[in-house]
Length: 329
Ligand code: GLV
Ligand code: GLV
Image (cartoon, rainbow, N blue to C red):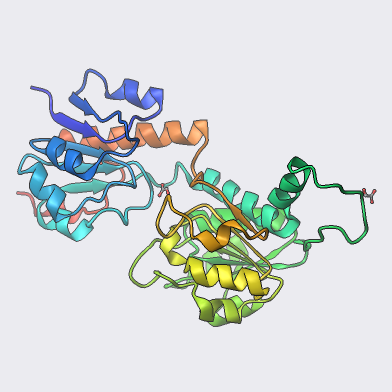
């Protein structure tokens, strides 16, 4: 018999097509859009594979509910903070993500937020749409130049480096910080300079966040971090919401401690801290980092490829816990 698979959210059409005829498919189609927890626990039972999106928490409770046939959890995202990786590993369940294919799209969206923040793009659009009278004026809605300024990349992995590459086209220099410093030749090649955390905050005109969410990065941007930043600085977060303390950010934006911000992700997604909604100097997007037709197609196909590799007893391309395979006889 074909392996039983639960797919927790409908994927783009090409990915759905690549699933069909190769498994006994249980597709959650809503409503509501996200599978309710009790339904997830119920429908996971007896499955060999789970294809999950970032709203599904994959923890001991879900693994218990799935049972001993579960071989692989294929996450349709590069981030995997929704998954208890150690718990999966200890039970011999493979876990995969979808890196690389979304790097450029996410870097583009980070830049959309950089430009929105420095040049007040969304605020200007709102002004026009609300019918507010305006006339060209030398002092109207002034932002900040990017040319000649410093971009600070926090987390210089695949996406951080793609964001850094774009900065060179804008005539910016790039500084970065990360838990491990890049090798000197990689720094030279990428034209990025290492800074300590506090130095990066003090020097950067634009700060863009590209770290995974871990206990160490939760609320990395808190009231203390904003105090270290320039009053002209713009903060962009396309990584994970809880890396930024939203209430502290709202305070910093309101008091002018920093100039502007752009968020694609939220602490309690899809909820947004109320205080941000009334501020003109923050641009708010609904988690669109990888939301292009090309990228979502590639992500969907990659998640499906990972899923079937795991189900077939092969090593999936994007395996996050190779220890599981090493342990098998
Ligand atoms: C999206 O947020 C992802 O991690 O792919
Ligand atoms: C502005 O529109 C200019 O021409 O300088």
